[in-house]
Image 1 (cartoon, rainbow, N blue to C red):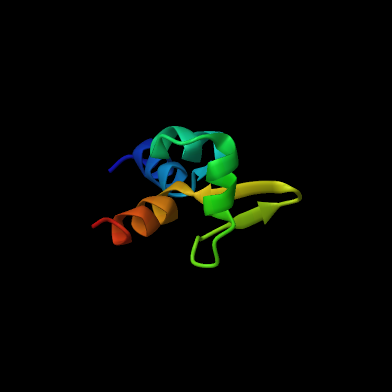
Image 2 (cartoon, one colour; image 1 turned 60 degrees about the vertical axis):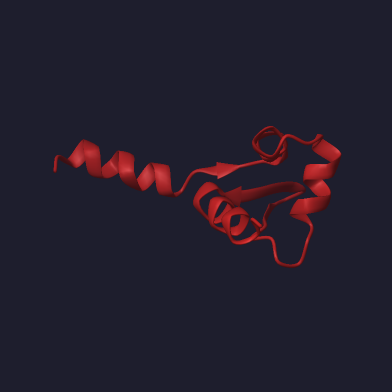
Amino acid sequence: MEENEKRIELDDGMRFIGTKEIAKLMGCSVPVARQIMRRKDFPLIMCGKNLRVMKSEFIKWASERRV
C-alpha cells in the first residue's frame, strides 16, 4: 500500500461531522439533531460551542440502535 493511500485511510477514520451533517444523514432538522447529539449515550465531542462526532463513531452508534 502506498503512503498516500495510508494517509487517506487515516483521514477517513478521523473525519468529524457536525449538526448539519447529522441532520442530513438522519433526515431530521438541525434542532432535532442537536437534541440527539446531547444524549448521554451519543459519542459527542465539544469543540468550544460546536458539537462534533467522529463519523465512524456515529455510524457505530446509529447501527447499534436499529430495530
